[in-house]
Length: 461
Image (cartoon, rainbow, N blue to C red; front, side):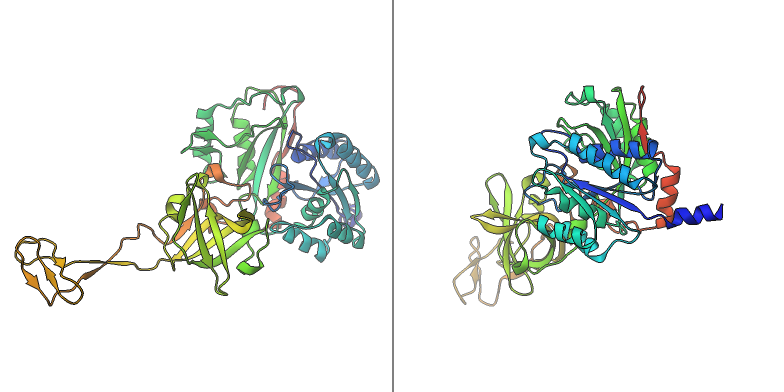
């Protein structure tokens, strides 16, 4: 028995990474992972050493399809060569190549991930990386890789492999449709969804937008995803799915461990002069212009950092942060999370993802003195000439205007977009200061005690 256990411990981990298998017309990389996982467990009897990982990469990439999510499966088992063949077959036959998918697939057989792969993964969260760099790193580390179409997905495949996700993380249980139902309207009982959301909060999040009265768990396109429940515990997100009592016969579901809802793309702080288009991060800065309203109700203002570099910041109306931004004043000190784009007359612009007001400048306005006889506001007689009451004509040369502190109608603190405007990576308000710490033993426990993948032979979930 001990010899058998030691033999299993000596087996190398096979990391399977893939990305860009979908298109704007359909398919889904997580659905491919769900189908492949079912085969790996039933046909090859592998052991998963972690939940399937759904890693959302830099959301500002122009080439992305929808959520810019890559997948990594980490397994131990036998017949790795057969597994590679099966996976390759899946990518070739499932990816939406005819509609522009550009998949990348990578196999990395190693217990410890090389530093340059980890570095690539970290950079993929907030910058643009070339396919050539991914190829170079893959060859250096003896990673077997395949590319289809233009092969852009190789970057995501390696980035998913290189992401241990050993910091804050969340879970998502994704339910999948049967093929015959793909493209039809998804029917969800709104009242039941609200009830389950209220009961499970804060262990699930972004299920329903109460302000807009909109369901947030289901996509609207022709892809095979029915819905997804995001949260802090895979047992709870899975119970939520099963408790929805969905009328449609679903194919099954699978739990992913993910960087969704973590702001992982906004961790790095950069000088304004070093920010490149289509990157993400955060910056500490100070307003140098008053906010201006532009067409559509959006807000623009300019900021400078401590190096006196200057860039414009755009706050878009759907975020519901425009009312807050409009109250900012010159010299207010703020921190912003941003996505960088070339927008205003091809000038680099920072699209605001969160606003942290750190210091509000004190602003004063001046009021004329009050007449001592009739209580009316006096009028100035001119520079250094004092004041005169417009009613009783009383004059006072020794009076001066009174400085009154303006009510800024703002308080210091964090402001984030409404749920309807959240990106996959956006951290919900309640998750701040409650980020999870990585605990390998806890994840192993959850993996063993959660029904994290289910494929129906029939009936309802």
